[in-house]
Picture (cartoon, rainbow, N blue to C red):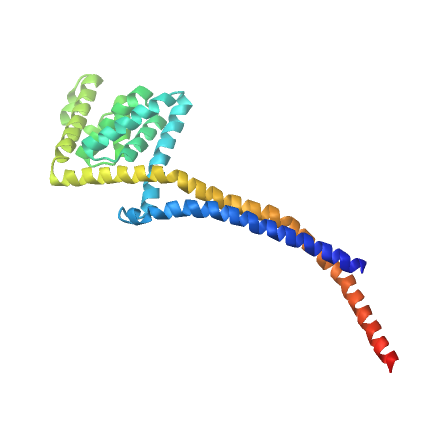
Length: 274
């Protein structure tokens, strides 16, 4: 009997814990279902924009680019310059068709290369213009700008041989900036063509995806937090229940012995009756 009583108490504890699990799960499920419902409500419209993955990817890429730039500026103590640089990148997208996240990434590279904070915008702008003229990557063009500022103009003598005969570095640098300016003007003019209209549309569409991604970001965070909270709650509630279940198993042996004894006694009583 003592063994049976212990088992019954353990079973009661497990039942109470199971009820607690069910209650916690129901509450969390309601909250998560509301968030999931809000998330699903916009999915039909989102599908027209290329799907949720594309929206989230655009937002995450933009966020990562800004985060990297902010990190580079924070090291210098110039965090306040970030917003102005982001605005500049948006202007460059309208002028040249180069995505603002690409320009922001180039600015981060400029910071890592040692450009002064106040010179990063101009260096990035020059690199974008030079890339258009030379066909080189933006990253390589930025490196060429850095080299020119240090007095190395080898990357530009092919484009303008006269640079080799200029007397001062200031003259040579002015010639390089003239090449960059030509590239920027060409890009600006190209934005007025059919090809440019496509770039403008692509840029605007990318901005739209980033904006929608920013709106959905808090919902993504809440849903992820809800799932994490549900997991943590279940683990904390189930742990004691598992412990009580182990107690039951530990008492199974005595309980079986007690049942066996009662069966034997019953059999003996029946035999004695005959």
